[in-house]
Length: 117
Image (cartoon, rainbow, N blue to C red):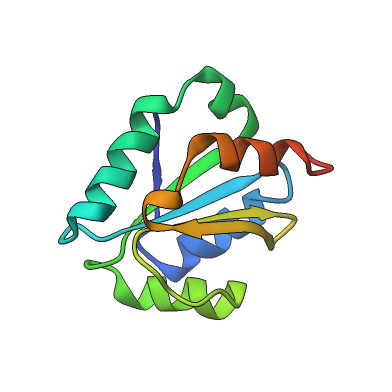
């Protein structure tokens, strides 16, 4: 899995812009949380070329870049949770989930039900 790291609001804006070409996953990870580590590990283990074809993944270390995490909440209108997965299409959130409900099959299903996937 090749994460695109987000470390600034400009990179967040670029990720949002990328969602006009292909569904974008914003994954907010807390490096201090075992549940977040479990969700991240499970997602990475299950990710494959099929997922790469349908979704462009972006990763945010929300401990190191808390202002960017806050910007994600502001720009998407989705209340912050950790860990959190938000799927964007055409700049808008179409699916989001958190904690151990983060599953690749749910992300893929949502991405495939969009017009630009």
